[in-house]
Amino acid sequence: MSGSPEAAPIGVFDSGLGGLTVLDELVRRMPHEHFVFLGDSARCPYGPRDPQEVKSFVLEICSFLEQYQCKMVVIACNTATAAGLAAAQLALDVPAVGVVEPGARAAVHMTRNRCVGVIATEGTVAQGVYPDAIRHLDVGIQVFQQAAPEFVRIAESMLDADADPAMPAEERFDDVEVAHGYLSPFHELGIDTLVLGCTHYPLIAGLIAQEMDEGVTLVSSAEETAREVHAILTRRGQLSDAGGSVEILVTGDDVEKFKVIGSRVLGWDVPVRRITLQDDERGCIE
Ligand code: DGL
Image 1: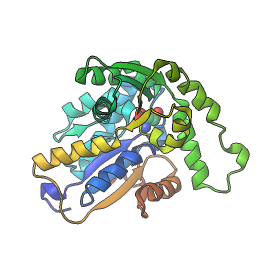
Image 2: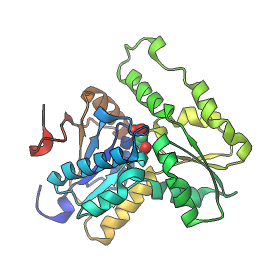
Image 3: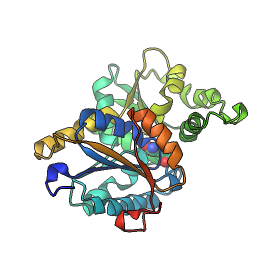
């Protein structure tokens, strides 16, 4: 890596595969950037964990990413953003952005009847970050939240099944009932916009859309987050205009799964390595 700030990578992380939906938008908008994506799959899911624990994971990952001298860090996980964005911003010398504020902004721009639903992990819902962020932008908007933790499992399992076509049919999830349970309460509330407040959820947007009334728009944070990262780097004069690469690091033993899903989401074969966060020398263990 050259010493110029434009050539420095952008660090992106999530608890698992969900953050790839954000990475995809980042790469689309900034194809000449170098991205180091970390999936903390050994500790996924983050959603049911105590926010203090998630905050400690965020700080550990930020410290790990410092080895790469990133020019910016993107927390591509709502749960980690809710628990640890402020701590990351205090700890890092470079800008750190999360996905909650961009997702909230996209919903505020989108809603016509000012009635917005949010689905997210238990951790994100309990901390109330979406209602706060949405009402910070428009206090007149009504926000209804629903924790949908099983959607993380369903997304990860669907992808397991996709990554392993030999998986028997009975091991694939029958998830329509779960989706109905989470989403049917929104019908009576009259929302016209539903925020996918977990970066795993866009991976099962088809399942979610099936359960929603026709006029409801699904909003994810990915595009708005990419726009924000682009704006920050542009203002700082740190956008790269040549080259471009993606490297995926995982803490779990699911290198193959990340290879299959990563290449599907991004559209080309992405290198994936297993790392341990405690190690230095870029944590390489294989
Ligand atoms: N992708 C994470 C998020 O956006 C949640 C998945 C998990 O529970 O770890 O909140």
